[in-house]
Structure formats: structure tokens, C-alpha cells
Length: 95
Image 1 (cartoon, rainbow, N blue to C red):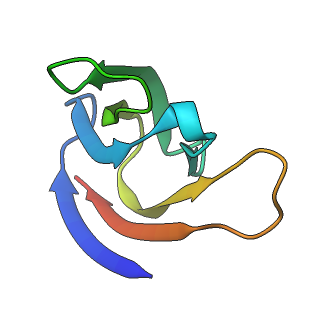
Image 2: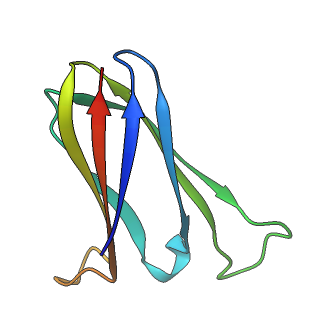
């Protein structure tokens, strides 16, 4: 699992972007404390040229709503599988 740190301000949007291939069933899911951070948007931008089975970038836009420290864990997995293919953890310091 990869771990990173981010310093952000309350009400200042930030994004996390990961490579993804949703046509194979692998999509990212965000686990976080809803009392500290709000998920504003989730989008997918396909790679160009667009091909069947092609990937792209999944982007999550978050808004910090309270000061302090929290964590976001990004989990890449297929919905029908129990085990994650990949996890990334982000320590978020909100001021």
C-alpha cells in the first residue's frame, strides 16, 4: 500500500487522480471520514484514442469541511471480488 501526505485548507477543494480501466471491472472507491471531508465529484476521462478495453484517469474531488487530521483510503477492486487489487492511503492535514 502506498501512503502519501497532503496539506489542505478548510473549504479548499483538492483532487486525487488514479489510472483506471473500468471496462475490466476495476474501479476506485474512496473510504474517508464524512465529518472531515466531503466528496464533491467523481469523474472518468478516457485515454485518447478511445479504444475498447482502454483505460483512463479517475478523478475524485474532495472538500475539507473541518480542521484536523484524517485519512482517505483509495481502493481499486472489482465489485464482485473481496480482495483489493491495490490500495493507496493519504494522510490529510486540514487547517
